[in-house]
Length: 185
Image 1 (cartoon, rainbow, N blue to C red):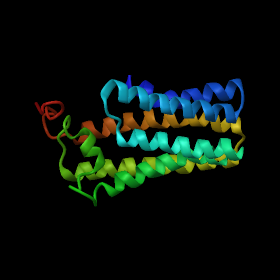
Image 2: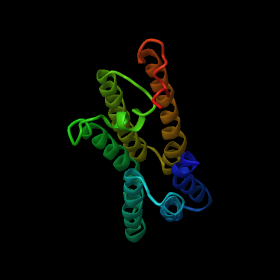
Image 3: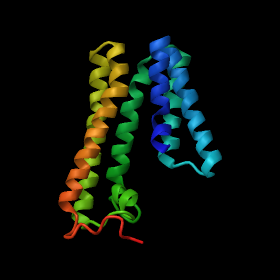
């Protein structure tokens, strides 16, 4: 369900764009982002910080697109989100308890040596930075139809490939016996 909710604004944007135009799509993505935050709050009585930031960026950049009738702001939104994630993941190793963000997310399910946590975190930093840059290349060097398709299918496809590659990498770096997965009870 969480995965569906995470992609709902992107799917709403895609469908509205195909049925109308980029401004209708932007309004649909803003509405879907706010609906996801509201639904999550209603269901769980909390919303993750990153979900709030992502929705906030959609409201601000999407709102600027609608208000100024200039799609450049919504074109930058995926880059802003990805680069913000890259900064947060990178910064996590220097702030607070200095645990890499990926360890904070997966540490309850997997045991890895600190070196592997840092490598995995750096892989996510690189992934987010590259996705942000790719978004700019497609947004400003291809037509809007190509960008909208890339935004849904390209970035989603890259994410799926990266997650599979991460899983393969994790299996190679788990401590001997591979019984360290899901054994923290």
